[in-house]
Length: 554
Image (cartoon, rainbow, N blue to C red; front, side):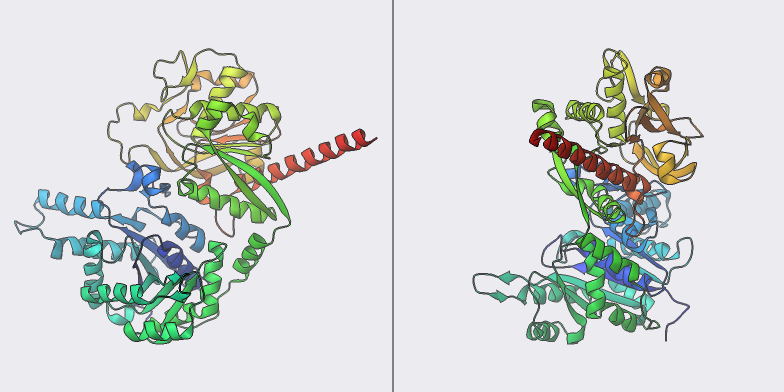
């Protein structure tokens, strides 16, 4: 029976190659445990020395995921929140940089009383302290899942793995489980799958003192029983603890496949938890709608990191969620804003039913985004601007509709005659880059009758931010006199949070990042309504085309 007095811990490591999907695997097992009624959280241990990913290029690390409490974290925390529908905090992401920064700070204060500071025990103790701290949270968790970044054998990961070895001894084997994700490659030339990489990966773990309790084998073909038996034999496991993790069309199928194969029951049994049937009915219905929608719509994302889709991971998933709630498949058309800047928007935007301009930093590609926004505004195409997208929309409106000259953001032109977007007052004296933006959840009051108010169905909301620049309130009267609507403001500092246009079917810009709060079973209201507007625009276009064809034929 379950020991109700002790939190259980599940560690996820990866072997052979990186990017096997540890985050999805951890989130999927978290979903299975939560579906059984357990209080679950997930943390990420990242081996890089950066304090957080906030200063990393999206090409290096994908998107930066921001939590309510203002932490800039790994994008896997987005998967965790979407799968288990639990808000993460800064406790849920720890990097090597944070660990060393804390230990060195303690040493400078004299906390170690003159002792020699070493990887063991000081670094490993700090790692263990953070794991235990994450398990406490606002309310004590039944189960904490811990994903270790990198690949077994990397020198950077060794302190984390040593900490896990110590942690297992201290917490008791009955309270700790190790899940190892490996690659079982399929050699097409010979028509064989190869188990040797998995054997070597587990061998490397065992050299460190860790024995996996379960193997998840990534494979593009079915894993036959004889291969499972061979892996189990050489890795000191029972065959029933070796599972295949097949490639799937949608990541949201993974929890269902794991449950079908018995992963959930095996985890529960291994940790001595009370067995019970999971409630996955809503999840199954969601996956069914993802795979078999009744409608289809094409929406463009115009940015400068479009060659690396992980830069917009949360936006992509928010479109999946909102597509399901509209019973539609959203096809994303990726547009490089620099190409639009060079060639104009008409040839790129003629076949879309919606345009989204995401967040970003820097001047490169800005004029392409502004040109795309003008095209959408003038053609009545539904538009959604996020963070920088809102700022570009205000610049375009001020230039084109208000007729102001030399309009820009001081981020791109510090000497602009009309800086309709300007640096926030709280940012003027900031010199350090890491963790110094306006970060995390802030309140916003919505104007009744606006698209935003109709979407949220409430007057006060809270959304997550990540920016340094804002709409310059000195221009609001000019902008509003020509049809710009301030649909949402922060009640504490009166910053503009949401804009809309008076004479447009659906034109919404937000200073915050709504994609960060979209969930599998609860799409974000603004994304949901944006997709609905795009579907309506597509239907209107089809009806118009049908009428034109009818008149031509007659």
